[in-house]
Image (cartoon, rainbow, N blue to C red):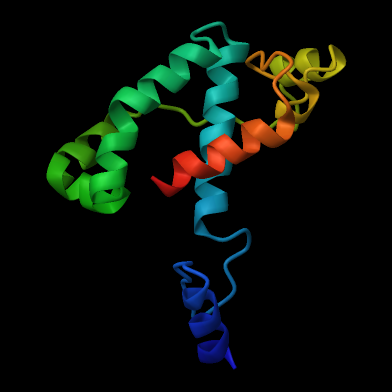
Length: 141
């Protein structure tokens, strides 16, 4: 059954990953949740704005991750360097309080994302369908 479903998804052009046990939230969603917490923390603390965060990801992190993945990127950094960075304990992950002042403010202002015409960014009067279509085209490139 699992192999049939895996083959079906591969036929759709997807890259399914079959786990040997249940992973709550799946790998990519869990990593994205951690990234969301850190990005919101930087905005809430006034350390960076949405555009600064996206700039840093688009012009640095994403190229390394797209080329190597994260774990191979760690190999290229050097595992001793990673261990030394952990040992300094200078980084503290943000606590998940279940609330972000930046998100609350945007949502209260009706800036709930692309479908509302604004979120962290303004999308003007561009039809949602056009924005989504362009995103999908860009993802295929």
